[in-house]
Amino acid sequence: MHSVYSLEKVTLLKKILSSLKTKRIQRYTTKKEIAFDGKRYRVYNNWLSVGAGANYNTRWPKDEKNTAVDFSFHVKQHYFRAGGFLSGTDFTASNNYSFHLGYGLRKEENKYNLSAFIGPSLSYFRRPLSDSSNYNLGTVYNQVGGYAVIEAVYKLKYDVGIGGQLFCDYNQVQMVYGARIILYFSSAYRGVKYGYHDPTKKK
View 1 (spheres, rainbow, N blue to C red):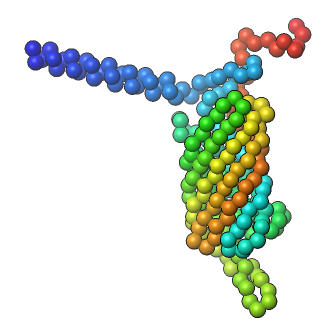
View 2 (view 1 turned 90 degrees about the horizontal axis):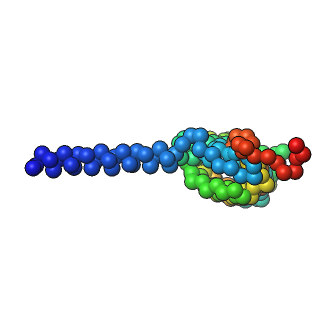
View 3 (view 1 turned 30 degrees about the vertical axis):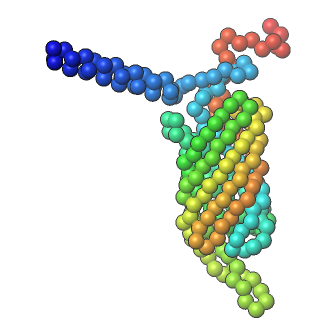
């Protein structure tokens, strides 16, 4: 009787483990696709964000301008980001160069893409020293810090959009925070939906 009971427990445990494994496989499938507007798109996809905007620097208390590039990619269901930005008194006068890696969350729908990332950063910059009457850029810093960003995109097409970022880069010497407008390009497109015929095109 005891052996029969033990066998039933082992069988039940195998069923539970098999069910969990099946759910995990269903939850993440590399080639999982959706159909939208007559086209096929990959559910798990990567994207590029390129933009420019304004920011404030606590070490040099003046309004600045910045440009940025970020590449966001996934490993299974987990999203990561690698990127960098330049900032300075003007777009052509950058004196702060920051690079970052991040781990984040993402929510993608047909008309929008929302994401947030946080992680370490490495910054190289020159900052002014004040004397009796002048400023100079004689001090060079290499600082490890932290970077966080929130991004919201409205999609013009499923894989192309426009949006904005709020960001903050912090280290022991300075904090740079601001906003920028971005363009969004994703790798989701896979082709025309199977069996789809565009009604606007003549046969």
